[in-house]
Image (cartoon, rainbow, N blue to C red; front, side, top):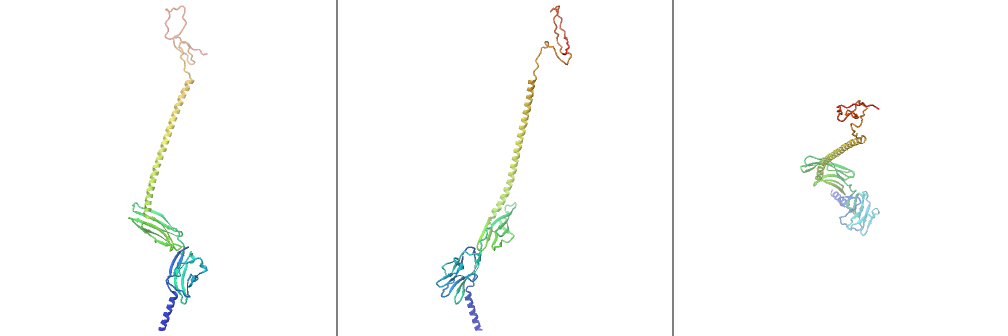
Length: 329
């Protein structure tokens, strides 16, 4: 039993030496950025070496006592920090994701460092949009429904303000996107924040919730004022139209009356021109001519004075004169 226990203990020590540090460092790197691969353990090389391997167990670089060699697959992408056996792998792409191991090779192999690397794209920008809002008659009440959207996902959330207290109603504050990022909406210090993030990058948009509610109240007041303004302008236009029509009709009637007066005056003037005034004729000098009456004129008869008559013996003129019958031509 004692011999078996000794052999078991020796095996565990050997396995521990082979594995070295069991801690695996998880690293997320943004696409196009550099990866630092560090060795913190002090190592003295004799005839041994230290090598960095990728996930396919292919060497990136091998350190010897007086030399180092970079693999052809990583030529131009490896730089050295000058600290122990640490290196920098430049311009990482998605294909570079995987496990990287620093290994001491010699009579006893052991791990000096191990990194599990994930390369990620930067997240897309986000947009915070107010989809609907409701403001009650109380200035202390305001409900907002907002949408936080990214390139490949979006979420809707509702926020309520009641008695100066803000809260979020319904739904989880965040959700995962198809690209593996996280999209979230939350309240922080009076702000509605829309955040899109992964382990290497984040973007956000925010709005002041107080300002959103004030804008809605202001918009309601503006809408009401617009209605009042439209009514006032409409009434003014109607009044102006009525005044213009009244002035036009009045001028038209006045012009018509002036035309009628001018017409009457012209007719009268024309009659005066075409019908001359009859001249006064002596009653006794001209014979009365009338084709329609038998007796035309009654007046003192003028007759010649006989020689036998003297002025003193002249007969008095008859009160009725001779009536001469008109002889038609």
